[in-house]
Image 1: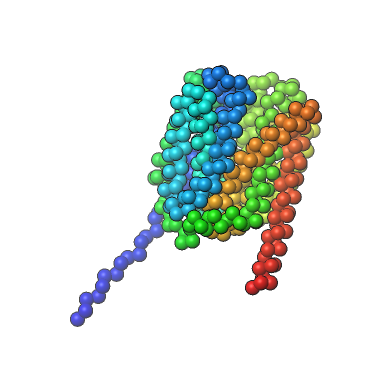
Image 2: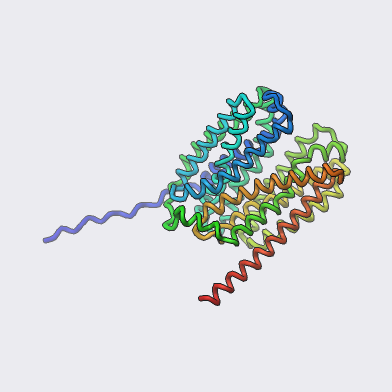
Length: 406
């Protein structure tokens, strides 16, 4: 008589709270948003302490952006076989240590290197966090979940950056980066406690991620973000002189105006995420058209302080949703290169940061007037829309070609 073999129970799915998962991931995006922008708020203090000019200190900001663009694809490809929770923990640990290293920098060279290295995990963290949130939320709520994770980035502009800037002004600029490092380690605790272990996709591999580099649909979508989002930074970078020189506002109003802009970004991001779950393509098109109209309206609203602040709220409200919406679209077209596409999305938005700031500065340096950066935003929004229409046409052509072949 044979003894029946014992039945091995199938592993039970790990329980999790989607609220706490998203909250933990959003703390990480809050940390990154605070770190990215606090260098702008403390640029004069950094320049004075390291004995460099303010324009030279601007290279530290550029070094971080360059680190984001370089690090995102490298980490996405090399981390293809690493479980997502493990990768998130490793990225945030690296981020915390890199910001702590910045706080120990005593020379311009050390500062430059530490900011470049600190930028490495930025894009990969946002990319992986978006994938985790989308998978756990399900297809019907994924855009909303991504927007909620990204909300940490926008809240950082309202709360994190002012706090870190105040700390840097009161206790030395290094305190601002120490604050960011502390938030990174809080994120580590949250992710380790609340994000469940998620099995790797069977198709996940370095080869699959590298294959994504051949995906033209992916590159066109990234170009939409790199161009269409640049308008926000063409204005954001020069809000202070626009308000003081054109609107004739007191410089003490600038932090309040930026906080109201950030509030618009928080609300706009959530609304855009909700709309994207209803109809993704209409939402992306609507964001680009409404942002272009917001820039036009802003050009007529900057003469008065109250209407100017309303215009900044409007710009933040209309533009910010583009990031999450494009992130969702990339999930549909990236195939097996999910991590690469999601990470490169944030490289594209850092390129938008650099492009918008450069073009805004260019028109100002050529004496085109204080409103010129706003019109740069209008042109870039239309540019993003044009690229999106090309991307949709190419996607339709590719589908028709595949159907004919099959």
